[in-house]
Image 1 (spheres, one colour):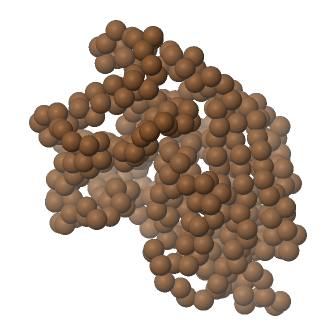
Image 2: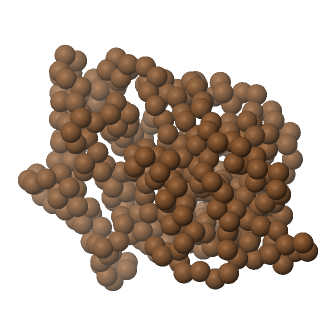
Length: 394
């Protein structure tokens, strides 16, 4: 399990102002994206839309889809193109990975949000930045890393609530100001042959499963075989035996087997009708706070960490859409699936194939400062989702 839960009380991390550090990092950003993530070229579309909002002096919230670790860095590269650095709302655990990240990230405009409970400080920071139109803020409205470029997950309420609160403040100014939202579609493309690029990692996975590598077998056949084995191992662990039926039925059955005991204990009711991510968030909110307080007996502490590992597994399973490799899947979908295999087995990722990225800025959506319904009926979120789906062509 990746280190996404921090076992200590939450302390908000505000962004540092100033352009010195963003300007310095901008000089090495293309090299960093190329060497660490394999992103070798960039195509930015409709920058004029963002430039028009900047020229008008609007408070600007950028809402991108989130399918890869490097999305935030790609947004940073885009900020260089428009000549205006951004602020970025980022999960608190990112700041706790190393002393270097704790030092550098706030100076590059990142500030924390706590995913395991309410975070008034983060909301206040976001509203103030937007109300002052200080810089655009990049907020990923899905709320988590989805790992699938051809799927958009349910958008969270928080970014829309922040945008409306800032719009209310700007509407009271003299003269009144405006807040706008620009959806941003980030789409990655292969820039090299897939088969040779993933040959070593597939052989490594096959060896880890106790198999003899089969480099001459068709790529799709190897991917399907690995996926079946990894799924079956978890079914045996949580259900007792390998299951039959369609992939969709098996995935949902395994997710229920993982989450139902946890929901029974911590929530009291099961929520099969909700997204896996919503269920995961609800469980973390009740399990993590006592861990952070540091007052649990060691046995209870270990039990909760084991449960967090189970929750993490459910989240991983949800990142495998059952129809993602149906028919004749694109090389990009195959690459994403292989990367998820590697990450789920080792908690590490490395670039296998050079990537290009196309970033498309959507039309500005003026934010209504009045009170609007939340959730699926929120017109702001509906407008953001509509543009993202159109730009991503999903």
